[in-house]
Amino acid sequence: MKIYKLHKYQKLPITKAQAWEFLSDPANLKVITPNYMGFDILDGADRKMYQGQVIQYIVTPVAGIKTKWVTEITHVKEGEYFVDEQRFGPYALWHHKHFIKEIEGGIEMEDIIHYKLPFGLLGRIAHPIIVKNKLEEIFAYRQKKLIELFGDYK
Image (tube, rainbow, N blue to C red; front, side, top):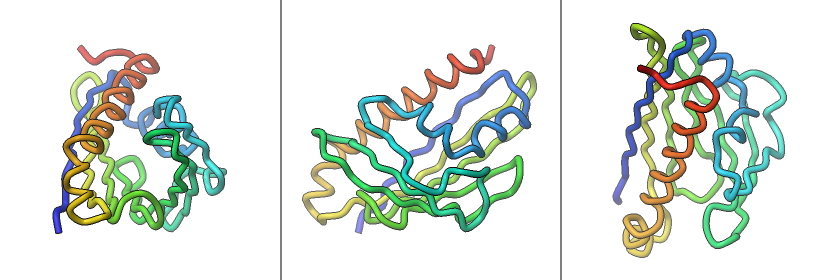
């Protein structure tokens, strides 16, 4: 059983309160997701993030194949961090921690994702060819979009 890890940092020239306000609104996930992914929220994004919240999406990550993704917000510490875990979707395991830390001149966001692919050996073969590259591309888009929205940290 292979569990992969993606670890990303981004600094932004905004306050912790501004960062939390944006990140704790589930509807903003669509704003920072590439359009080609066909990201649509079906249910559960009608209020600010809270522990136990279940959010349902449709995504089209590869080859126009629509996939339902259901996540649960399992942990929330107001203004500090939250954790989302996939309950149903394309991964065998998806555990995503989001941290916000105040730094001089702004904030640093940290994302730590542990994930496992389905399909055993086929999943492990697909990882370096498709999945890892796709996740890197999504997070590169997210970083660029957040800079467009909030400015670049200098």
